[in-house]
Length: 168
Image (tube, rainbow, N blue to C red; front, side, top):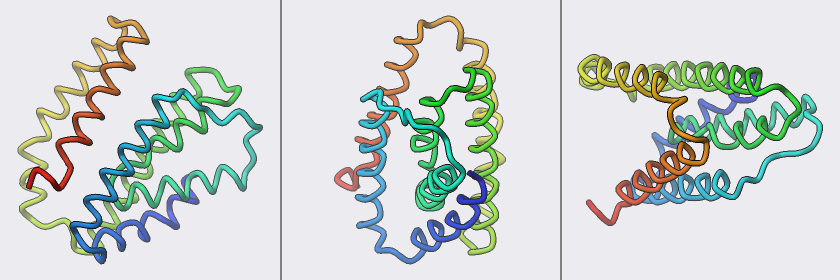
């Protein structure tokens, strides 16, 4: 799956740099909304995983990651339908997202999209992000699966609505 993403993350990053910013913002908001609908629908790929399909899912996710950091939903929908254990599925998803995030970091650095000011913001906000990850990991088991999913869907919906170009 990462092989597919390795080829297409740079394509997504190029699209991010070269497309009309307003059109791209509408596209990203639409993509986020579509991925939310996919996740909320409960649809999962139920077929047998095959290497060509796995690479294609990685490639699709790579484009989405390069453009908007929204590469997770296709991968989640694909792997949650498989026969792997929950632990294996979670590990695969975490590993893929970590790998594709590194790929996009390299693509953004090479393309010059990440400037010194971006790195300063990353250093300033990093501790709060880390604290949020730590708190989320600790609180994860306290909510029912249904409550957890509803909170996630609500947060994604708020992100979609607040990211619309209408507000700026």
